[in-house]
Image (cartoon, rainbow, N blue to C red):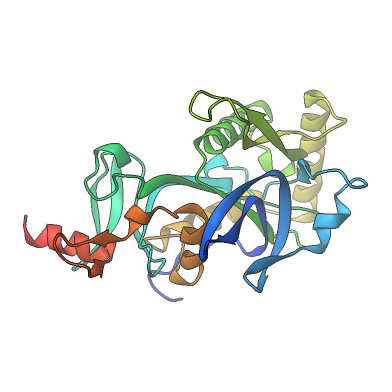
Length: 292
């Protein structure tokens, strides 16, 4: 196996609550008030809808809930969230941290550094570094190890999803992989949003079921899997080792689309004082390292 390559869950589609549109000659992210499920293929700069996107809609209603199953029992395998900094030009991950430590690209390779969080970091300040979460879920029964990925830099979605995963794990006796759930779009207003609605993603027990019913079904399905020889613990361990095999989960191939949608700030490209030539974040880090 290739060294330094993170082995991530196979992805067969995307879940989003926004899109990228061209405005005044620039691609800018636009928030939406419903889910969109797409393939991983773009046409004319837009993601092609997945067939399941229309299957889940009721009449002409907006898609605001999606029945899902999780792949893993460990909450932190289903949802990975870190502070993340990308090179705006190349899409390469520059730095990934958790507020205590980080992995950072330097001229000498990837190194472990202290992570002071974005607001206190000279490299990641001014909106260049953000909380970045990835949730993998199953939709339907066509591919039991393939997943749809929901990516977000929204603090409300990350915090809510993380809380729900840990609560449901505890309540179900660590049977997340067989618990019938659904993604639900919620809204709230804050002073920062000038009292206009902002949307975030929640994870709840599937519609029409009580918590007790869902837990009973989860245990029943779990026992059926054991009888069939399904080893969930081994799967979780294999995925844990897969994530640890590489320094960063994202690769350059996906990075450009990620920064276009989630890291659109102009400050992600830094300009030398007194010069019109733009430099990348990687070059800024190299300069800082050379001067310390």
